[in-house]
Length: 234
Image 1 (tube, rainbow, N blue to C red):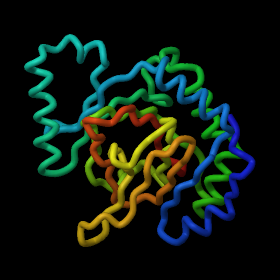
Image 2 (image 1 turned 30 degrees about the vertical axis):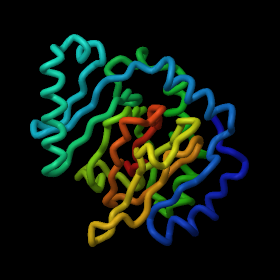
Image 3 (image 1 turned 45 degrees about the vertical axis):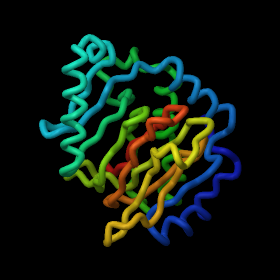
């Protein structure tokens, strides 16, 4: 894995300082981005990740498929009801650095996590954001299918020492009307800015910062693939 030669941390910093967030296009070497997408689309063992009124849960895909259809529908309704009242989410994930069995995580994803924690990439993150105390990054792969979403939150969890959230996007083609936008509301509840999950782009944002992933449309013709996590201090 390598950053594209055009990646300029000092230039990124100029934009990041304006609002605490930035979208960087063409962040990786093209072949690397294509390889990660192929892995996400064809090799990754996904599990359903939900947050409803009972809190967060991960359900392996095979287990979810064995649940009675009526119970699956009720589970989905519970997530929707929680979303109507406050914080909730539904998407698929594959935990990389915290997987119970690291061998189940595809090699390319493990190498991507190593890349995130390599000295050149960590230095890029420090220069691009101004957080000199960044020392490591965690990671998970995510897949948003039609109907999936993540309601507003700010990523600030006591004791986690999260400095900057990142989202590397890997879906080759995405249309804005498909939803799945990384969106930032203003103090009045209006949409201030949103980033489309463009292929081979990374979004960086300071923690805390209120944001949401808008619901993926039922007519979206692709899944929203990404690798996401936080650059953190020790």
